[in-house]
Amino acid sequence: MRVCSAALLMTLLGVSAHGQAVTYSGDMRAWIPASDVFRTNGQMRVEYAVPINYDSGKPVVYGSPEFIGAPIRRWMEAFAARYGSAKELGFADGDRVTTRRHCPAEDALVHVYANPDWIPPSRFDEWVAASEGIIEGYVTGVDPGFGGNGNPSSRITVSVVGSLYPPEKPFPSTVEFAIPVAEFVAGNVIFCGFKSWGGYRPEEGDRLLIGAFAPPEGDARSFLDLVVPSQVFVVREDESLERLHSATLAVNQHRSGKGSLEGGVFPGSLTEFYLSVDRLWASGATLSPSLHDRN
Image (cartoon, rainbow, N blue to C red; front, side, top):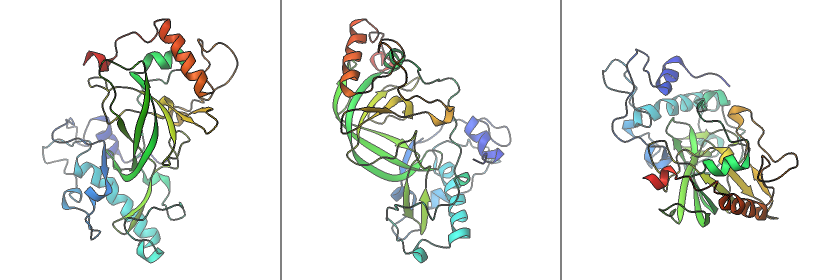
């Protein structure tokens, strides 16, 4: 995957191209629906069409319209240069696309950087201890839009049907999180995100187990803005589990080997999952106060 431009990379790291520190001012959004970026006539809304002015003296804000708009406009230019228009290909704004045949290469996307300070737990007891809470639910919505870095992304809505060792403030009945996987038409352009998220492509009706992690200075809320693939299990029809992998860190985190579930082996079924969490709870592994509890 091609590394993004120096200016954008420095912005992502918190420094502008001219050395100005990037601060957060205004509304930082982790996910934006496509309808907020494009009008019904297909025109990009003016606030997203404003180029970033690094010499203005104003901070560049991650998640701001000008920050998000820059990679979207680059994608639109790459698509137009290669394919012309979505309309000429037989697509209309608002369409969901089921093929990646008309997607520019993934090097047109903003690189997704891993947090070097967070390593996915390699043992199930570590995974449980690190989770602010564990929820089970069904995917009830997959909506197209853009992440805070401008990549085409989907907002996943999960209806919560159960939670394990819930914190003092119970989880809401519905939670949402964004993943950089999407194919849709807007502004006479076909937008494509990455092919998968830890090996997962969302569909309504999917059954998930999520270890919800709170931001360092925040709390577990209805929008889970720091969910990463290795925190998620997909529950199959036979109730077997598939843990998503963290491709960014090149770690294979699927179940492997034999041994006690109180050690490093991850559970392979929903029943195993619940029983092993119960054992860990009884042993006190889940009793450390979470950030969610402290807030």
